[in-house]
Length: 542
Image (cartoon, rainbow, N blue to C red; front, side, top):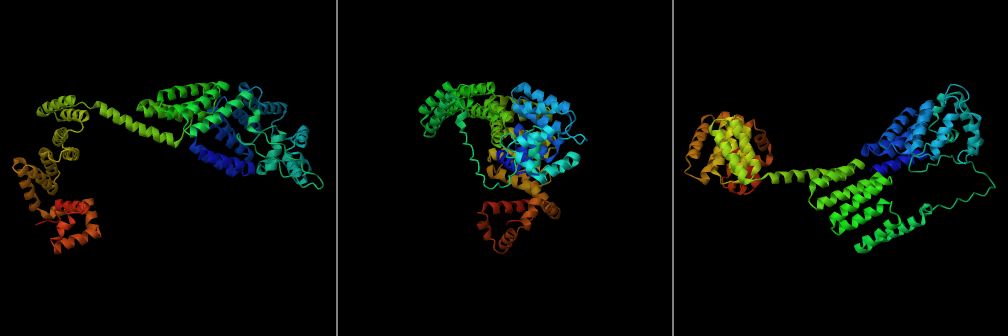
């Protein structure tokens, strides 16, 4: 998406729609905030708008992200020149030339600011010296503007009134003229922007045929051309899953052009498909090394790191995989890699949890908890039972014991949660149901406690604790039914059930035809709602 937005920004910049260009670049930056080219392009758009302070800010951000990129210093020098800060502009151009002494844009910009005796936008009437108009006439992009009376009139008005210039920057002819007259390039970094206006038709003149388009291969050496051919052949074999042949072509490409990290990445891709994950990792590390030495695109380096991460993921070394995906993110952020890191963090956490499981140490912690509980040290006992649970999370009695501690500490909600986990792990664990009943009694939820004791009696009908609890809850439920109904109606879950038209119809049907109950109880969802109403004391089944 960031790439699409950048291309839209470039198109808008080329069309002279600088406001839209800024908007597209800004959205792209929100998605990819470490992409120096986006800030550079937006700097160009701001400069064409006449907003030179914003252009300077983006240029400085470009330099901070990519301090060895000459184009950033060119942008900075341009903005400073427009802001009449010629000394700072000179330094910006000189700083850029330290990285690329032969950069023509930097050399032209430096020459221009040094030649200007006065700041570019001073209050004098000599804003544009005579040699500037000579440049305008000689440059093929702007020479036709000399014959455009309307434009030249506008340019002279800007010469006498600099404020007029700021309002005229939306005119692509003006930005083209300034680029030529001041020796400044305001186009985007990855697209050549056509700045010359459409010339008026000239009768009886044959159009000049366009120069032949240069092939991409024209700038390559013979070795690079051969390397590219080998890579293309390797790609064809890779698609056909002829991995041995693909590997031979990619290695041949490396022999011909050993400084191109793409070929190393391709070899790594073959090893990955062959499930040779360690070889894949070694090759990717070599690719990163070569890429760093030859200033490869950061996206290629990010791709190599991601492939290392995927290889480690296949080897189930999730910590190493996470490390390399994080390295990939540091080079180029993408939502896909971010999601992979989140998944790996979950796997690592689960691995650590499983690695901690030790039933023997769990029993030791439980015994320690029992000893502390008997001494009345309930908070310390709770910690010991928690350790036992972490050591063996599938043992129900540890949850039951911790629930007893929570009950003593009056943390009934936490105790209830442990009881529910206990009977979930072992529905036949009588002690868990009894403890749940006692906690619910302490929370004055007699109807729900009654159900818990009933579950215990279904497992062991002679259990004295369960019988006593069931009797006491039955008495409590019948002693003040009105109060119990009031509490039930304050329960949001009960309110939702009562308001449900379908449930109201079912309840009415059950009242008129008791036999309908058995049919409705076959539906687990309806049965659960009926059970909730029984527990709350709002209905009774006889």
